[in-house]
Every structure is written in structure tokens, then in C-alpha cells.
Image (cartoon, rainbow, N blue to C red):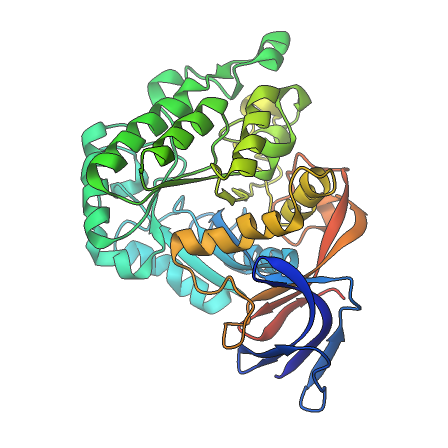
Length: 424
């Protein structure tokens, strides 16, 4: 199919310019003003008010297959991603079997090849069985077929295990994307060890359980030369440690999620849809994360989309499973709370949701130019809507943003030149 998008505010050279974009054979054939529609099978007019961007990339998504298809499937998760303007999802290895070997990975990639509607790039595990301890995997055996290595959901507890993993990944030129959590500091906690926990007699998770392992890993990354990425940071100390590590030349990047930038522990309710790991921290932590976005310490927004069944999320803060969904609200939440309020520009939001993830993880795309792959999204930055989880494409419905009034909606998603979602 050939496609012409006319009068789009197109993301080119880090700014928006009103252009026509002609797509052919999966690539951007040409950009210009008043391109003729005579050769186009389909023409869409963006009316000079919709924004054409490189498709979003989520470097931290849980699609739950194989092993947990009652929570989400590759099909439903990628459809949800397509609806939200994502053209690439990087999937975490909390699966059964774990992708810790050729056979374990193949169980996942077979499903991806069959069912995914957008690009899905899996992570392999760091340790065998994704236990965070014991033996590291044979990284070389699957390195060509994964976007990186992670034990997400589990922090690597042993310094020597992480050193060995980083040394091997540095040799293979592969990234380690680390869930940082010191198990001995958890003490049965399940929300942030802060004011809300004290007021409501909940067991708290201390901030040190996150930042202590980040501090260790930055030292190990400096020692080994490994490319090191920190998952879902949530504390002000984490921001400070990463900022200082970058200043001394450590090859470290990091991500945070929309909920950590827009909520704090005093926004909690006695409902499982507010429970995730790491937990919502203090207002001071939230503000430090926003400052990290502004100054570039925080590189990427990732959703940590983590669907569970309704039963698993219906047991309150203490007993519900950790994890909330995020794909279908991410852009609108950040557009509403950060862009529309003047904290960052829309260009900055595109950078941290579309461009930087590709740069860090070596993913194709990120530019709208002639010859580039046509992985694109068309955004209405002003559309107002109210979050109703029952309308989600994802099987997961647990979101802390339920009933929020938001601005911003994806209208069209193009993957490899084909329309995979159209809400125009």
C-alpha cells in the first residue's frame, strides 16, 4: 500500500514542520509541501493540527507469553501498543519458560512471529531461571536474538554474578537492563516506606533497596565497560547516583514510568491498581525524577506495562499482585501533566518516548526522513478523554489513572508502512 499523509506537523530535526509525507514499500519515500496524491492508494489529511512522529518505543513491557496468557497475550499486548502509537515493544523475561537459553527464547519468539502486530524485541535473562543469583546464562548463545539482558522483577543479588554478567555483555556489546532491588532490605514491604504507609499501618519498601544496587552497578559498569541501563527508577537518590555516574563517564542510562512522574505515595488508595514495583514514592522523589527528565539524567519513559488478572489485582494494597498497565495511557498522561503544563515540550516528550529508546538499544528508526523505515504515529495533542479501563485493548485493566481526564490521543499507527491502528 502507498500512503500519503498531508499537512502533518512532522517531527523533523527535533522540531515540528508542516509537511506531506509519502510512504511506499514500507519506507518514507518523500517529504515535502503539496505532494501529489495521484500515486497514493490512501490519503489522510492531518489538517495542520496533528503531529506525525516516529512511533513510540517501550523498552519495558510485559506481554506474559509464554506461561501467563491469562494475564495478557502477545496479540492483545501488541494491539494495545499499536492503539497507543507504539511500533516497538521490548519484552521482559518474566515468563515460563524463562528466555535463558535457545529453547526458552524460542518458546517466546515463535509466538511473536505468529501473533505480534508491531515489532517485539525480547530480553534474555541474566541468570539461569531469572533467579537473580547462582549461574549466569550462556549470553553468546542468544545474544543475536535479544535486545539485551535483564532479570526484571529480580535484582541480581551477588556482586560477582553481576560483574561476570557485565564482563561478558561488554565483550558481546550487549546492554544489561537491570531491575535494582536488594532483597535483604525489603522486610516484607509492599508500598513505599513513607507517610502513607505510616498513616495507614502498611509495611514499607525503603528507597535504599533500590538505590544501593544502582550504586553498586554503576561501579561495576565503570569497571567492566558494560553498557548499563537502569529499569524504572523511582527515588531521588537513584537520580543523583546516575547523574554523578554519567558525569564521570560511566556508560549508564535509565528509565522511569509515567506514574512515578505524576503521582506520589500520598495519592495511594486502598486498591490494588495502585500497587507496583517499585512503589509510588514521595513527592520529593517525584520532583527529582521530573528534574532528571529536564536535565537529561533520565533518558527514557518506559511504561512497565504489567497486566494481571482482575482477581490478582482485587486484593488491596497488601495482597494484590505487583504491577499496573500503562501502554494505553502513557502518552496522554505525560502530555497532560508535563507538556500542557509547560514542564517539558512536546518535542522533548517525543525524544524520550521515541528517539532515545532507539539510540540506547540500537533499534531502527527514530527519524522521519527519505529512505527511513515508516514506523510512525499520528497524534492529536488536544483531544480530551477520560480513562475507562473497560475500554482498554489490553487484557489488563488495573491502572492508577482510572477516571483521570486527559488530553492527547493517538489517531494512527503505521508499522513498516502498513496501518496497524486507525482511529482517525
